[in-house]
Length: 475
Ligand SMILES: NC(=O)c1ccc[n+]([C@@H]2O[C@H](COP(=O)([O-])OP(=O)(O)OC[C@H]3O[C@@H](n4cnc5c(N)ncnc54)[C@H](O)[C@@H]3O)[C@@H](O)[C@H]2O)c1
Ligand SMILES: O=C(O)[C@H](O)COP(=O)(O)O
View 1: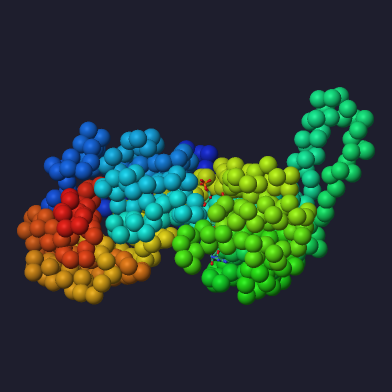
View 2 (view 1 turned 90 degrees about the vertical axis):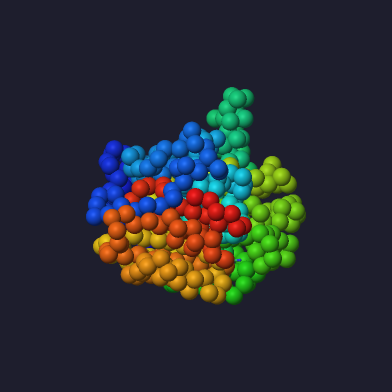
């Protein structure tokens, strides 16, 4: 399911000041009472790349860009998390939370282990660069889909009936004191059409597209859809009556309404200008295009020509320099996910995801790292995670280094995705002296060719992280 039970439960009692509940236990120092773990955790050398004045030992620091829902932020226990809502602060951040802020590499302190987008689209984050730096980027699939779907339905109505023009006209008449006199005569200027019996083409049948299709069916519409990457989960949500097409052109050609619900991906093979002159030439002259996905998906010049030529409409959630004041365009200020419910759900899901990664190493909903659901850490072990380039031989060198240090691996997980590999190794503490030192072994592993970073999870929030930055060791 999309939203964790934990987040959902929290949302149900969203206005109650309930303490957040978690299933995953935080590794506390008490859990390791039988011995101590020594790592080089950076307090001494923090100033080499962080801001020593802002550093709170024993706390995770979360840096927020944009306003993040307090309901979501309440998922972070205040005794373990230092939340910096002012983006100017947070120079020692362990993780970043953001919405549509256009994140630059300079916004990401070296201390950052993870980034979570409270929302769906991650085109405002330099994901490829973050992958090179070994930083997982997460999003919150489905958390705001209902909000967007509702606005798409509203957009269909705005595109069918001249509601906005009618409202403006009534204001004008009202100012002139002519409203009562002229209303019945003038309404003929604002006639429209009904949704029932019309055809909707949905491009992208993921969380938003599939929900839009389902509700449009309930309104009596005929459905076509196109999605070359349709997931089983989304397919199960689709109404049976939806006809799957094998191209965008085939889907749009006899559609009265077209809803665009795909991610914006730059570059070759991406989706920039996917609704261009060629696709638009297949639109019916009075088709209504609903773009609640991203502005860059639509070629503005081609759209302007289409709007100029006929009675077609463009309803969009994104700025457009060419059609913003066109009589046949309705341009909204990116409101799709701006409901209390969606903001709370997305922030709560992002917070849960970040906590899972920071506290136990679990990876879910990442757009660049492999999903990694982990077995429980066995008793008398310390968890060690390594992020490395997905090249042959690295895993062997990691396990060898543990062997050389007389450290026994009790269980391990190795997953990869594209250029990145992620290892989680639970290391036995039994049979060692009272103080188990990871200082040397962590440095050796982190500085192996191909390794980007490592973490020792031993109970003290925010510590135990090491990075290999082009051959330089940071702890
Ligand atoms: N207006 C808003 O406030 C708002 C809010 C949420 C999401 N969005 C945008 O909507 C997009 C979709 O959100 P979602 O939650 O449904 O995401 P999703 O990942 O659940 O669904 C996207 C679907 O698009 C499909 N797809 C990708 N490229 C395609 C292509 N070229 N042609 C057809 N299908 C394609 C994928 O296979 C997937 O099924 C997001 O990426 C984001 O840009 C906007
Ligand atoms: O991709 C998304 O989730 C939406 O565009 C929402 O963006 P917002 O969180 O900035 O409203």
